[in-house]
Image (tube, rainbow, N blue to C red; front, side):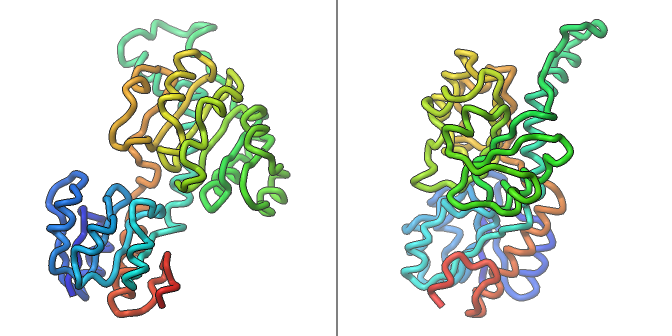
Length: 320
């Protein structure tokens, strides 16, 4: 069968696919337009896409032969799963393999803001460092602080567990109780408002849904401590970026670190001006190991779906 891939992915997954099927890859290193995806998909049985690709009903309906959609990502809010389900097309994702890498990135971002790593690197490279000084680049301790985690699924739980060495008080906001965190860290489940008021550091790990869109807006940001740091490695639209820029201008929080953006790849202009904001290019899962494993998982999902079998990570198994 024929498979269209919207971007070049790591070799291990491609090798698996090419042993069984014919593969066509979008030739440019950029996000394809909806028109380009429809054009590339023509005559193909499978679509392997990325989180940044708009896979809406128009795309799904454009190719009558389409019988499998494999996403090279954990999130799938870019795919019209309802439309695919309606047409009997299985959709899969790649959960689990990027959990540790994303959790590690969230910690890296937290440290970068708290200890002013990026700011200090720039300062030093620009030749401004003239020797040790008592008040130079003062940041904040990580240990013995209160860590607030919004969303404690796989990644949120992994992120929290990595706090063990820092003797932190752990607060979490979630629909469900997390017995692992409560047992291992004596974590406490609280309402969002309490978490925002009490936490020194806050990390977001929720999926993007109608309920989580702009979960963190001006009202929520105003509840945070003046010394608080906000980290987002989940989805950009969880935060109202205009509100965040306003809060940062008014110096109502210590800083923020973002790996994802509300209108990605566009970044609210104001965010780039703050020295206390660290910006990453949606690279939380960007380790060699994680990306290779994602490509293998996406390929295995694709092969199973094209066989008519339930993909190992099927999002809509009810079609079967």
